[in-house]
Length: 172
Image 1 (tube, rainbow, N blue to C red):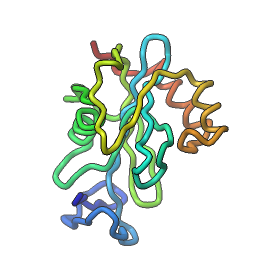
Image 2 (image 1 turned 180 degrees about the vertical axis):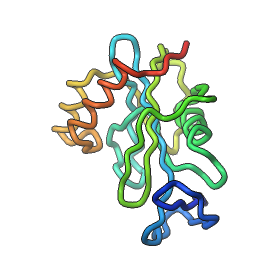
Image 3 (image 1 turned 90 degrees about the horizontal axis):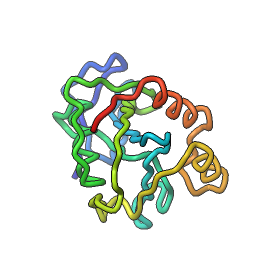
């Protein structure tokens, strides 16, 4: 059972906690994180959600993502999600998210990394991820158009690719 901290709009922790699936009270928010990993060819590593996963089953999504658990900060949640979903160790110590996208029930901290990864060596979390692959911007747009990718706005996907080119946080 996942438990999340709740925050004010100004990201101040309220000392209130909610269980995943419960309705988030008005004027309170929870923290979500995404890590977008690109390679030197300007391709993004994407994941396909499991067929039995609640919310967007079988759809392709950004590299990793999920909600921060009680007591976690953004970097800790992003590091945990990468390890859980892909078996991938990333180091975000002293690295802030590149952007934060607000939505009706929370805020989504997005990290952009460039990292060369042999996807055959990843350990996919069975409960979450059925496949991964490297794709370019146009491929993601085609997947969105054919309803195979979570329907993010084209401008958002384009912005992520732009951020990779101008502001990614490089790791070996």
